[in-house]
Image 1: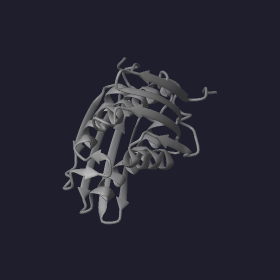
Image 2 (image 1 turned 90 degrees about the vertical axis):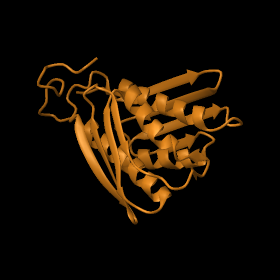
Image 3 (image 1 turned 135 degrees about the vertical axis):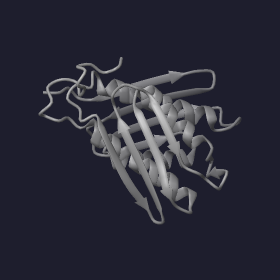
Image 4 (image 1 turned 120 degrees about the vertical axis):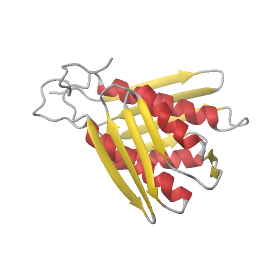
Length: 199
């Protein structure tokens, strides 16, 4: 029997104050308030497609710009994923998902083996998606990968609309993580032929 896989993270700095709760084996319930509408939308899609229960409250220095708030939310989300996974015993570990969004197609591949790395291959034409700078999207995926201790490859194979491209990636991220975090009842220990995952 595996314990409930959930985490609660609080982070307070001179720039932001964030509380985040995550349940891996949820129903896709999202309650996101970051002050950045587009980020709220993307995290809601992530939770819904990953069937994660996710609550986020963030207050940040948005009078400067959105960078600190968006980054710190992804720091907290990554730490929550890492904490909720525990020793990662019994998990599937690797998975991928292709998600179409109208004319755009996104791919995300995940390895929860404990080695943080991010490859992000996507081009955006518009400088901003609502209140979120499109140049931040790579940094947000990278920040998540580092703090969740996962290998993350994200690619937009094609598309015209930047909103659709971002949406395809966040949906694919949720679906790939859902598949990779599933418990495989055939696996008794950690999912590594070495017998250990990188700490």
